[in-house]
Amino acid sequence: MRIFSGLGQRYLDVLASVYIFNEHRGYTSLDRVLAAARARHPEAAGFLAAVEKHRLDERRHYLMFKRWFARRGTMPLAVDKTCAHIDRLIRLTFGCDIDRLDTRHVIASEALFLRLCRVIVLTEQRGMRQVEQLLNTRLVRADPQLGRIFRVIARDEPSHWLPYAGWLDAHGGGRIGWRERLADWWVHQSLIWFKLPLLFLNPALPRRQQWADAG
Image 1: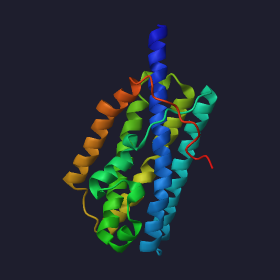
Image 2 (image 1 turned 90 degrees about the vertical axis):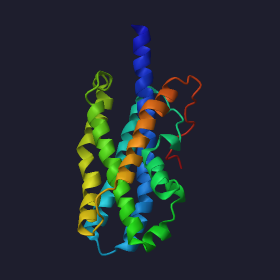
Image 3 (image 1 turned 60 degrees about the horizontal axis):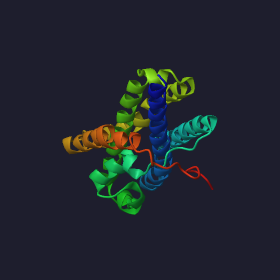
């Protein structure tokens, strides 16, 4: 029984480490989206407010996971951008990760800005479905604090993709193409069936030495 308990705690440790990394990547990446949106469409006050709320929610989720780790007396495992859904999807659709995304180029092209909106819709819809599945797992339900965190995320998720979907509808952004959906599917499958098991089975995986938002 102790072995199974230890494996369950390892699973939650890996899961929360991946999520806290993605939440940090999310809100810091949204700074770049906000910069592009403000420059491209400064008149769109409602849309800009929705993106700002999205950014604030991602930051709040990050802080909730940070408190979860602090309560356990541990730091998150040192996962990297290969575990970030948004980074990998941006790379497949734009040819670079989000740190290297040329915001000026996106600002100059309505087609690229709409593509960015489609990538965000895909990422957030994928996240919504994943959280719904996690909330039905026994391990997550057995951890009250973690369960509360995922319930908050589930509540917030629709407001994270609906504004971008509405923007696409209003500006001729078109439907999400099969190549974009295939890229999203591939990123998700590779994370679930390859990357996460490797993290789980790697006893030498170090922990972060400082929080991602340190300084």
